[in-house]
Image (cartoon, rainbow, N blue to C red):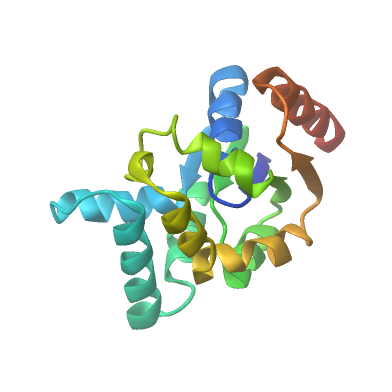
Length: 180
């Protein structure tokens, strides 16, 4: 049976960095909610930016049910043959519950708002490179962000991502040793 790691956290807290580390160092299969949305946006020839991801996710959930994206992600996970699976970007309770139901262990990664804002200067995806403090603060109030701390409180493990990449990797390795 595969080990399933579910990573959640606020934007720019380190979710994708953790997933990338697990893919590169542990051979994990990685999938995330935004990957599904990005594939649809690409097919529709629309820009892959945070605003479009949020709007598309909201429209899909409204039209096809609140579990439409979690069903799609769980389908990908169940069809993977990998021994280690990492998925990320959980934003809603039903997504959390679906992953818990298939045995996922949750890691909540967080960092102070000022550190996360500073990371926007190094990010090259989702149109975040030109964000201002005002835009960043406005994004923090959207439903896709406001649910995260409550979900994080339910996680099996918590990481404060305020140090170096090596510090983050050590914390991930420690957690994986506890799970296995």
